[in-house]
Image 1: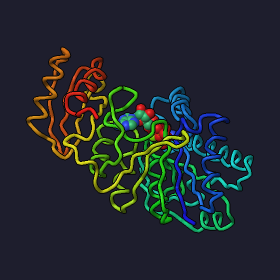
Image 2 (image 1 turned 180 degrees about the horizontal axis):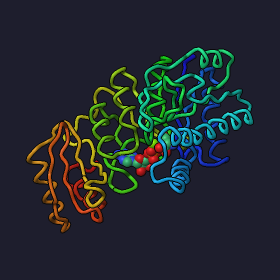
Image 3 (image 1 turned 45 degrees about the vertical axis):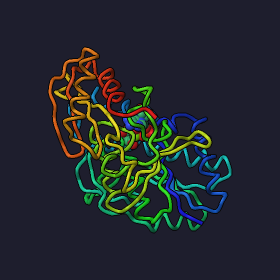
Image 4 (image 1 turned 120 degrees about the vertical axis):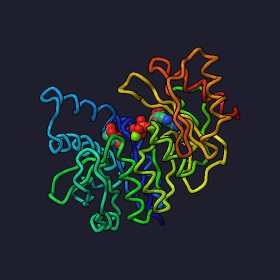
Length: 326
Ligand code: ADP
Ligand code: ASP
Ligand code: MG
């Protein structure tokens, strides 16, 4: 019997049907005798809608109140998933960050986890209940609710997996792993079987939203090996661990830059930065008629700046030029 942490992102818990599907994924593990701690994001679109509501009232809402507001998205999906689990015959208890508690520093909107109380989770799992923990939130020393930054439920999942000594940390999302580029943007992107902590961290920092950067650094620090997979039956996955596949370039990603006017397309991998790869990327952009606005070299990275409206083409052109097809 093992303890598993299973995290479900916003699109995986978006409606009643999806919540029931997720409940059955959890139930399959629970019926094998495993303890399950589920971590949930707000239902898809909820966090953005809450931010919009706040902005209707103030251009710069108080950070404390914004966190109090945004945390309700995860609170709601945790309670809904617990109800869905009960409806498929699995005892469950939802818990907010302050109930565990997940203690954080006081940086509203970008808090870091400092401590996790385990007694309540253990009491629930000892009673054979699935714990559904609201992701993305904690409580600071003043007793105020904090949030961990956009995409922060991944960070909650890895922190819980480490603190509870979980056997597996499974990050369920809407793609079946980490790819050499966002598979929604680049049809030629290939799923990686393994990706190193260092490369995954660099990819996350450079815009690959599939995992939160703080979750990757915490995983690296404590040797937690998150698995990224989808909710589809028999999904393949990617494991994030000390070593990856060892290719020159692991992946290519993009993010907005220059106040939104430009896009930064970043290559990540153990061979970077490299003049040979820089030349290859520039030639690919040239062939696509895309102007390079700047180049930056970093640790395991090479970044090329292009006009925002050409960023997708640039991403795919560079990807195809530097990553050999399978
Ligand atoms: P969740 O709501 O489950 O946390 P996210 O939207 O935060 O999901 O992250 C998953 C998304 O990350 C995918 O739908 C995909 O578009 C995007 N993504 C960006 N880069 C990559 C990559 N290299 N590999 C896989 N997915 C990526
Ligand atoms: N709901 C939060 C967000 O949209 C956190 C998360 O999804 O992990 O950023
Ligand atoms: Mg996410």
